[in-house]
Image (cartoon, rainbow, N blue to C red):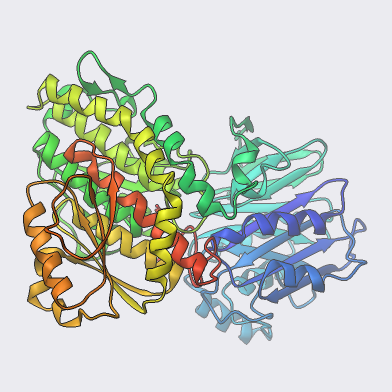
Length: 609
Ligand code: F6R
C-alpha cells in the first residue's frame, strides 16, 4: 500500500527520495510523486508526480529539480482513481505546502465541502488534499503548530510528512495508525513508512508512536505530541543486515525468500526448544503455567495466507494440546460483534504487523477484556505492540507480495505454541520429544524440497496453461490446499479454487474435465485411502492430476503427476506439503511472464479496511 519517503541533508533530495520509493515498490502502488524545497524561505515547492511506475516518475523529473529537502510517496488508490492529479504530494492553492499521506481521512467529504464554501478549488479527488489546504490556511507561527492545528480537524488514520516554503529547513511528520520511522544519518535525516527505504542509508532509527509527531532538520530530530509537549523517543541501532533487503543474484524476491525458508525456520526455533522436558519456551507470551492451563479455547485471527496458516495452527493446537481451537478471518471477526470469553486465548498472526483488519480485531478483543498474543514478523509493528504478549517470527524482511518464508515461520510458531500448551496439559514428555526431533529436522527437509525445483518447475509449466484449477485436501490437508490456491491465483491470475476433497462429489465434480487440472494434497495419514478414491473419481472424468504426497503412499495406480515430499510427524506434515505449492505458483507465474514480486492489484501490507 502507500509508502512515504523523506530526506533533509546536504545531498540533492530528489534522487535519494526516488531511490527510496523504488524500495517501497513491492508494497503495491499505482502512482508516485516527489516534492523538493529550495533553501531560501519562500522559494516555491516543486512537485513532480504521475500515475504509473516510479521509473515513469524518474523520467519526468526535470534536470534542475534542485533542493536538499524533500518528500516522496507511492500511492495505492483509495479516494479517486490512479491519475496524475490524484498522486501525492498534494499542495495548497498557493503552492507553499506539500503533503504526502498514508491512511484515510474519514471526514474528508465534510471538510472538502467546508473548504469549498471558503472558495478553495480542489485539484484532486483525494482526502489528502484537504490537509494541504488546512495547513496552508493556518497562520500559526511554526510549521509544527500549523500541522497540529490541521490534524485537530481531521478524523482518521495517517502517517504523513509535510514541507512548507516558509520553513525550508524542516520536514514535519505525524503518525496515527500508519507507521513512520525516522532514520538518523551523518548531518542528514531520513523518514520512511518502511525500513526497506532506509536501511541503505542508516540502521539508526526511531519508530514514532501513534499520536506522535516529529520535526526533522539536517541537524537532528525531535518528537512531540499534539499539545506540543516533547516526548523522548530516541533512536536505536537495529541489528539487521541491509543485504537482506536486496534481491542480490536471485531472479526475484519471492524466489530468494522461498529459498530462505530453511534458515528462517532455524531462526524461529532457536532458543525455544527444551529437549529435557520435551517442551517449548515462549517467554514472551507473558503467561505462567497456571494461566496457560486455564485456557479453554483458542481463537486465531489473521488475514489471507496468515488466516490459512492460522487454520493449520488451530489443528496443531487441537491435536497436541486438546484445546478446542479455530481460526477466523480477522477481516470478518469484528463485524459480527463477537462474544469475547475470558478463558479464550486469542492469537493474532501477521507477517507485516500492519494489516489493519487484524489490528482492529486485536483492539476489539482487548477493548472487551480478552487476552491476545501475537505471532508477528515485523519487530515493533502495530500488531506486535497492540498485543498482550507473543513471539516474533524472525523470518527476516519479506519483500515479495506473496508470502512464503513468513508463513513457514508462522506454522512453526504455532507448533511451538501447541507444544507449550500441550505440555502443561496432557501431552506426554515422550510426545513432546518426538515433536522436537521433528521440528529440528524441518529445515533440512524443506531444503530437500527446494532442491527439486526443476521437477516442480516442469509440473508448474504444464499447469500454467489452464484457465482454472482445483486445489483439494482434507482435514490437515485442506488449509494447505487453500494456501496453495491462494498463492497460485495471486501471482498467476488464474482461477484457483480450494475444496475439501470430501466435498467434491457434492457439486464441484461436475466441473472436472481434461481442461481443469486438480492439485491434490494427499499426506500419508488416516484418510489416505479415501483421498485416493477421490483421485480415481477425478481421473475417471479425465481431469489432469498433480498429487503432493509421501513416498510409499499407494494411490492405486491413478494416472497423475506425483510429487513426494519428506515425511515429518503427521502434525507437522502441512508445512512440508505447502512448500511445493509455492514453487508451483512461482514457476507457473514465471512461465506466464508475470512480475511475481508485484502482482497486479495487490499490496504487501493491507493498511486499509
Ligand atoms: C498472501 C499474502 C496475503 C497476506 C495477508 C496478511 O501471499 O501475502 O494474503 O498473508 O494480506 O498479511 P500479514 O501477514 O502481513 O498480516
